[in-house]
Image (cartoon, rainbow, N blue to C red; front, top):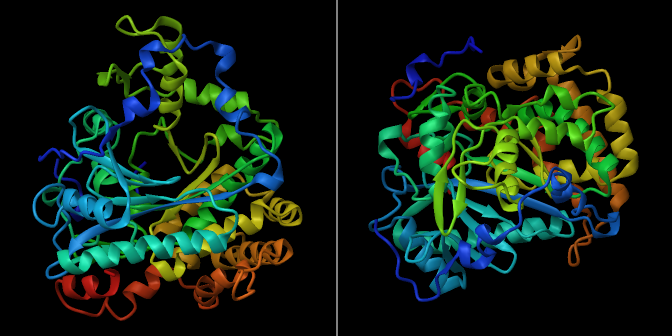
Length: 481
């Protein structure tokens, strides 16, 4: 799809190992995939159905990515070397009790664990907090605050800043390292042939993702369909990527432009799932027909690009037969705006600053975890078609909440969604143990922006567009924390 956006000037120009004594390997933690029994077709729905749980056990998970840069000049965080990712990981381990893990024995660390939380790395060195499932938004807020506090404390000595924004505002591709994770090399080669911004997606984008539970197959399908319809509205509300290569590019989200130019087989709004009769098997059938990336065997990697999982399940590959671990890994390489795994993942939002961050899980919680709100949101969006919302998704990249929609502006739909979520949170009555405030308190910042038809990106660029030439220092000041 060609986008009528001022993007041409930003087109893509096509270690040190750790010897941490506490290092674990992911293979050792998970067991050998070669010892698993072959996957059967009847097993394909198991990862979803086994995750069903009663509403009393539903939790909220948030994953948020940030770019690390040098405070003095905005240069990107390197993987190795002084002040790089490895040093950041070392400090997090020794000062804050995180445990590093590698993919293979003797390999470099690629993630940290502490309890049920993880700190992981995206291909260009983006640092991601994969938070533990929490009982309410208050707990999500506290975990996020603690994480950013630790990152801020370690950054004082390293002179780093962390940018919660959807597209790297300063770095060119050639300035970024590649994180040595097994699948990234395969993705780099394969995806570059499937979309002209695939490498930008891997190394220069950052997201905020919310993960929610479901009670049954019908509940999962209901929430999936609704979240797909609402995603373009929510993406516009939380647009936060107005800079590319140290300049204002003219729109609200460069990250979302990138996603229009990544492998069409595995991303988008999943039109086949909009049908009211769509089932879990429809999602499985779509996933089966998406080409694979790789297999993991005996602590190593077997590249297998291009073969669909359906073909792999039927014919095998290189003497290997499909296992449940292969299937789960494949599900994790699908990139739709809303993804189904053992949770429903809402993946449409740009990375956000702390003061707005928890509005995102609060919004989705208010809608998806309250029966009345769920029904109201369905009624609001029931007539929104895939074609309409795909068009809105495209236009809102540039125009944000001023995008024309249903005879008015997108901000009106966003305010309606907001009100439904706010009322759902009020009915939940989850009070903070100390302040006694309910979860609507985390919507205050986004409410202020909505009242002015503004996105977080609008606030970032307010007044900056009139500057002449490079605005790198101003961006570093406004975005870095």
